[in-house]
Image: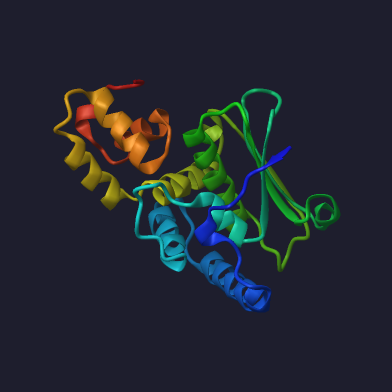
Length: 220
C-alpha cells in the first residue's frame, strides 16, 4: 500500500504538544458522539468538524487527509479488489506495529481524486458515529460504490461526507457564482474543481439541495 501524506498545515505539532493535542481531539470526539446523529443532523455535525479544525477556506477543498491525520489515522491507497470497493477503515491495536498507527483507512488507487476524498470523508463519518473507543477495541468497515442505499447508517455517513466537503451555504454561493458559465457541464466542472470532488458528488448535491435546474441531469 502507498501511504498518503497529510497536507502541511495539518501535520502534527512538535512532540511536546502532541499529548495535549491528542487530548483535545479525544474530548472533541466524545462531545461530538453525544450530540444528535440522525441523518437530518449531519449538516450540523459536519459543521462541528469544520469549526473545530477552523476550516473556512474551501477554495482548495476541505483538507480531509489532514483531518484524518490529526486524528492519528494512517492513510493509504491501494489497488483494492473487487474494483467496486472504494475504501475501508480498520481500527485495531495490532496495526500499530505494522502500519505505525492503530487506525488506518485505505482508498482505491484507481478511483478519481474527488471520489477518494469523498470515500475518506465517508469513512471518517463511520469512525465518528459508529465507533466508540471507550466501549470498543476494534472496528472495521468497507465502502462499496452505490452502497449508500443499503442502510440508514450508510445514508447517514454519506450525508455527513457531502456536508463536510460541500457545505450547503458555500455550495449554493459558488453555484450562483458559476451560473453565468455557458453550459451545465461547465458549472459542474467548476464546482468539482473548487471543492475537489467528483461530478457524481456535485450532481447528487444538487439533488439533495433541490436545485431544479439540474433535477433531470444524471451525468456530465
